[in-house]
Amino acid sequence: MFGRNKTLNEQQAETVTRPEREGAKNRPTPKRREQEAARKRPLVVTDRKAARQADRLKRRESSAKMREAMLTGDDRHLPARDKGPERRFIRDYVDARWNLGEFMLPVMLVVLALSFIRLPWAQLSVFVLVYGLLLVAVGDAILMWRRLKKRLAAKFGADGVPKGGAMYAVMRAFQMRRSRMPRPLVKRGEYPA
Image (cartoon, rainbow, N blue to C red):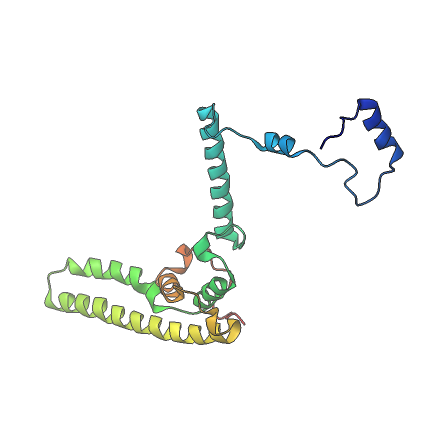
C-alpha cells in the first residue's frame, strides 16, 4: 500500500525469474479498478440502430433454434412449457395412443356440411355427432390422464406430475397428430417405458 511502484525493468525481471507453472495463472492479479473499467458499458447504447439490429438478429437466431428443436425434439432449445423429462414423457405417451380428440376436426367438417341440409335426419345427426363425439372425447381424455398420472408417479415419484400436466396432455390429445408441435417422435403403440 505504501510501497513504491516497480519500474518496468523490475517487473520484467520478476517474470523472467519465475518459471511458468502448469495449471497456474502465471500472471499477476489485475487491480480492481482495471477490472471495473474493463467491464463498464454505457447504460444507453449510443448507436441505437445497431443495437436494434443486433437484438433482432439474436431473436431471429433463438427463434430458428426453437423451431428446429420443435421439429427434432431437442430439449435444450424447446420453449419452457415443453422442456423437461416429464413433459417429454407426456408427449410420448399421448403420441403413442389413438386419441378420440384428434378426430374432432374432421368430424366437425362433416357436421358443418350436414348443417346446411335442412332435413330432419340431417339436423338430428348433426346434434348426435357433435355432442356425442364431444362427450366421448372428454371421457377418453379423462381416462387417458388418470392412466398417465399413474405412470408419471411411478417413473418420476409422487412429485413427478408437473403442474399443468393434465391440460398439456389433453390439449395435445385434441390436436391432429400431424399438426402437433413438438413433432411426435414415437410411433403409435410405442409407449414410453
